[in-house]
Length: 310
Image (cartoon, rainbow, N blue to C red; front, side, top):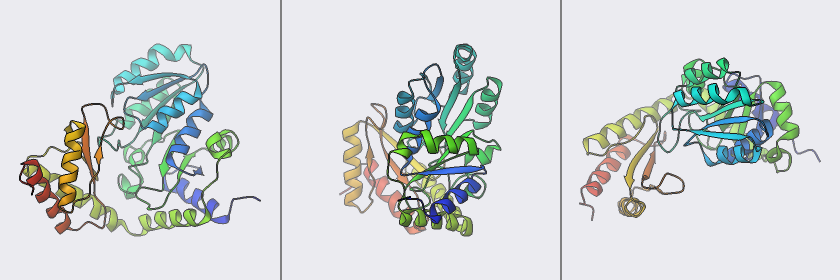
């Protein structure tokens, strides 16, 4: 039987409209989306220019494509430009792949400059907006929208701000048709269940109808960052993801355990998820967090960071 239902088509149409693209295709996960997208688009003789801190799904998709992969330093657009200038002439096609908002460092590339570099060198721009959509950019439509640029392929997920599961790739109709037929992680995998697709669609509807949720998240995140700074804790980046880099993996686990004993549930992020020596705690603010929650978290972190936790 055909597994597609009307809700799948509605979800894909809503996803494409959300990010200002003509069409979209839903995948079972963000990992499957990036894996299937890159391995279906690129191949031997092509060049993929990838940020050093791109997600594992991007790394694996690039490897499976069998294209030449050039890894450039994190957020170094100049290195992207230099790589394209030096290698584009030898490549059949070129792809520049980046995340819009890096979840481990809460930072972003200059998407406008990347778009111009791709245009100058006839390269395809692929942007993973997984951690930005729903929260960042105008009306939560992501950082491509904020920079006023259009990615050639845009990846988004339903399992972050939209509270469901799965993901999508958005772009032109030809891209979606190609992925429908050639993306192995789509063709040879079970798609979203109708229940999950319905939940994702409801999440998109809520993001449109309840902008106060997004405003609450960003306000609480700003309050948390200010509180951490007053406690002597340096948080990286900006926005609703608040990374606290501790360094040693064992120290990160110890601090996370101490915070958990005080009712603050936060997970230590250790290698290989982050580079060696940069283990961290990643705090993520949600719309359900109230001012009292932020204050309690800051006070607990203050005590732990000063060695005063019970």
